[in-house]
Amino acid sequence: MAGERRRYLRVLFEETIQVETADWTDPMATGLDISLNGTRFHCEHSLTEGAKVDILFRSDLKLEGEVRWCWPIEWYYQAAVEFTEISEDEKNRLKSFISETTGEPYPDFSEDELESEAAAETEDESAIEDDEFLMDEDSLSNEEGMFSGTLTPFAFAEKQVIIVDDDSERVDAISQYLIKRNKFAVENTDKKSRLWPLMKAHPADVILLSWSLEGEDGIEMLNGIQERSPGIPVIFLAGSVSLEERLEGLNGGAADFITRPVSISSISQSILRILASLAMSSGTGGSEDSSEEDLGLGDEEDFSLDGDDDLEFNDDFLDEDLEL
Image 1 (cartoon, rainbow, N blue to C red):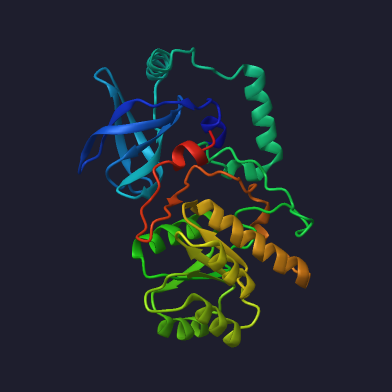
Image 2: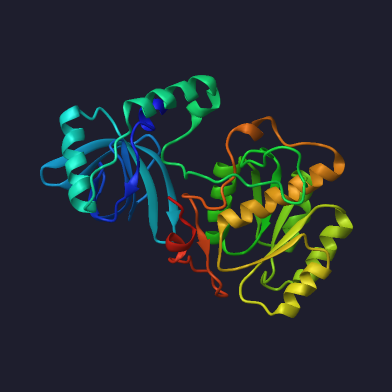
C-alpha cells in the first residue's frame, strides 16, 4: 500500500471541491494538494479516520476515498483522503482534471523511479509506515551536539507532558497534536490547586504553563513547581508580552518562553529539544521509536496559535508554515 501511495507525485491544488458523507455534504471544501492517489483539503465538518467519503471534483468526476486523518483548525478541519478502488479510467480523467486546473501536465513517475522506490522500500521496512499525506519533512539536525542520533517526532514517546492552561480550545489542539504527532502522554488542568495532585498521579517530564492563567502569577507558579519537583522543565506559553516579562520568565528558570502567534509544531520541537538536552546530560536516550521519521521544521498537520489575549487560531499559518 505504501508503494502504491508514493507512486504518484502531489501537486498544489487550490480548487473548490464537494465532500460528501452519509451524514453531511460540504460543497465548498478547499483543496490543498492532490495526486492520483488522494487529496488534502479544508472542510467544515470533522471526518473520522477510516470513514468512507465521496469527493466530487466536477459533475462527471466523483471519486470514493477513505479518510487518512483529520485535524481541527479553529472553525474548520484539514483532512487527507486516499482514493480507494480508483480505476485506470478514473485515474486518466483525474490526471486530465489536474492538468486543466493547474495549467501544467501532471508529473508521473518514470518506471525507473518506481523500481528504485520499490527497492528502497524493500531495504527499509520503516518506509512502509510512511504516509503520502504526511509532510515531506526536513531532518532536524543535532543542535550543538546535544543529542547523539537523529531527533525524531517519536524520540521520546510516552513522555509525560502536563498542560496548565484555562483555554480549553487551545489545550485540546495542543494535546491532540502532541499525542498523535509525538506519542506523548498528555494531561491538563486549568487550576493551580489541581496541578499538584495531578503531578503526583502523573509525574511530569515537561510542563507547558500559561503565563496568564487566570488569578495566578506565572513566576509564583514556576517557583512552586521548582520547589516541589526540581529539574522538571517548564515552558511558558504566552500571548503578547513585553521583553521584560519574557526575560523574567527565562531568568526565573523557565526552559523556554513561547509567545503567540506560534505553530504547534514549534511547541513540539521545543519539548523535543529540551528532552534531548536532558537525555544527553544524563546519558540516556529516547524511545525505541526514535528512528521512525525525521522531525520536520514544518508540518502539514500544523496549527497556529494567535497572539491575542483571547486565543484565536492564525489563518496565515498555511502560507508560512506549510511546506509541500
